[in-house]
Length: 120
Image (cartoon, rainbow, N blue to C red; front, side):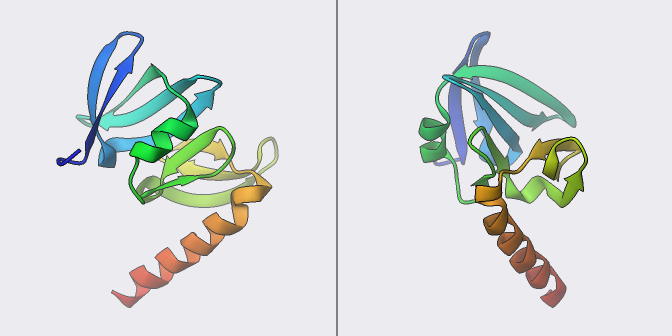
């Protein structure tokens, strides 16, 4: 992982994915849906891996926002209320639900991030 990439074996082949290109990861039991930027498009692929295991491979730029989702904080556009999904993270146009358990942590990081940007 010297070049900040991880190797993932999906149901359709093996992929080398740069950590900075991963937008978010969704979990469905022992399978993950990984969404990543690749040449100005968004690719997704299914990997047989648990969320717990992939968290060990990810950098500090990733934050878990519910039992089933991890997002790359660098792609977080906003946190907003949604009538259908409740509180959601808007990540590159995707609406990803945030659970109450993780909401406070995300809002704290969001405030720190905005204050840091204002200081520059």
